[in-house]
Amino acid sequence: MEEVISFISQVGFPIVVTLYLLYRIESKLDAVVQSIQELPNRMNARS
Image 1 (cartoon, one colour):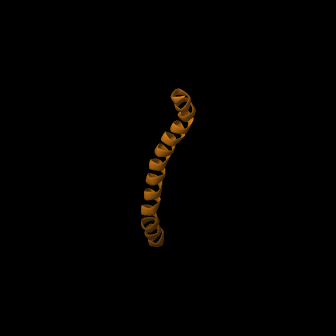
Image 2 (tube, one colour):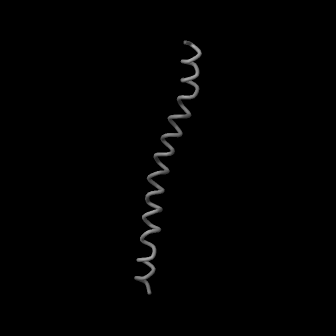
Image 3 (tube, one colour):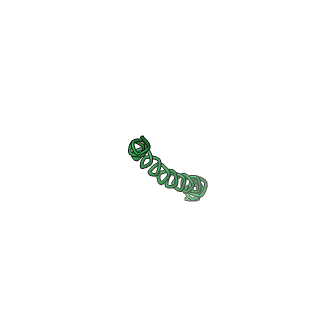
């Protein structure tokens, strides 16, 4: 049982950090996708 608790404590922190970073990246990727989708409209507006 102590081995399992030790494993969770060692691996738990990296998992939490990874999930946090994935969440942050997801929101930034959504913004990039939206900008790319709006790009043709912006380019046509300039012409």
